[in-house]
Amino acid sequence: MPDVMVSFPGGLRVDAKVGEFVVHTDQPAGGGGEGSAPTPFAVFLASLGACAGIYVLGYLKARSLPTDGLELRQEHEVDPDTGLVKTVRMRIRLPKGVGSEHHASIVRSAQKCAVKKHLEHPPAFDVAIA
Image (cartoon, rainbow, N blue to C red; front, side):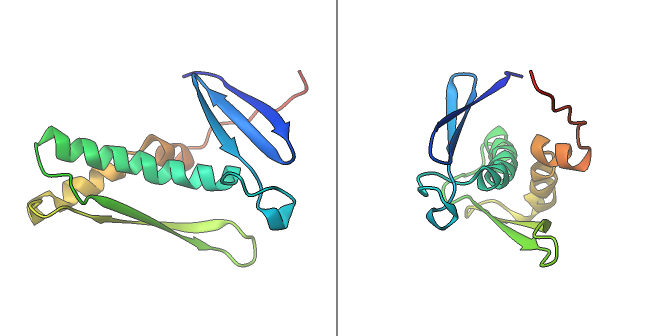
């Protein structure tokens, strides 16, 4: 797993370099940023959906099932007192031609997402001044 190198290109923008890729983040204009990219938390939430999505896509492709029109919608229920997400709902819209006999297996595939597993079994955090 590659290290993540974080840089600060100006304003409230924060970039995270992962291997050869750069994930750009910013804060909304109303929060002092430029709104030029999603917030770090939005990227985190997107990683959940993208992760589940690749497992669903992999299930369909491994069985030569259709993928055109495949969609995954992710919704979040936020605790009004803490502001933290308390429920993540994923709804998978399957392409025509994917029979109901696959539904339970597809849901199980989505639940194998490594990002989700890390939330269920969180790592320890060690933050220090280098």
